[in-house]
Image (cartoon, rainbow, N blue to C red; front, top):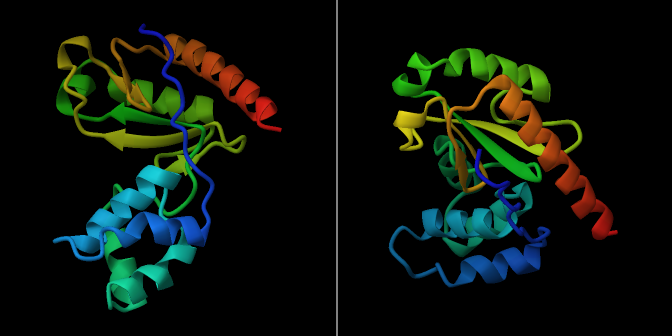
Amino acid sequence: MMPVASPARLQEFTLELATNVVHECKDQPGALINALHKLQETFGYVDEAAMPMLAKLFNLSRAEVHGVTSFYHDFRRSKPGHYTIRVCQAEACQAMGSEALTTAIKQLLGCDFHETTADGNFTLEKVYCLGNCACSPNIMVDKQTYGRVTAESFRKLTATLASKAQSSKEGSK
């Protein structure tokens, strides 16, 4: 396996910062989508408190803004874990055991897809192809891809990541 990926450095949500982040998108084509992407890049998710601000800024109803955020599965509506783990569900990975790996991962983490572990360390997502088919089954942790993943190698990886997340949490206190 490759070296452990470092967690994304996300900012804590404030409405003031969110307003500043999306304001530059106001006059762009596809403004709402661009603004939602910017919010997610900055905070890791699109906070519910940003909905009225987005609606007002783009002259839309809250329902329209909600419709866009709920239609596109890439927009997260809650704060992600310290690390985001994506498990490939494409055919090549399935042929190499990703279904059994997925079951083991869910059991080890104690959460399902689109959920975050109770300790806040990991958010689990599914993805369809990481472009590493020759080394199936694959996962991605933040932006780092891991191939030929087994339940045991995943357990070791998450133990290392959990330790790093704990150190990071203690360092920020």
